[in-house]
Image (tube, rainbow, N blue to C red):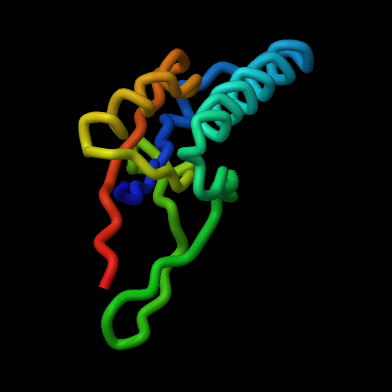
Length: 113
């Protein structure tokens, strides 16, 4: 088994704000999807949502505010899974509820040292 990182991205300017019931339903869809990965024994860490604000450290200790307004997609969260292959990890990512709202999932294999 290999370890993979899912990075969830979304265009927060384009996302629609829903009612409390709609937001609760979306949260349930996320929990159900992650639960299905866990039920297969493939969830390492469900991860967390990330705050929309942050800072970027650049060379020479330059610190800037970020993420930036001109960036179309912002990283919203992450999860760690295990899968037999990159293709299997991509298949698992296809079930991500964020895809139904115009988001994307970046699938990256983790190289262990």
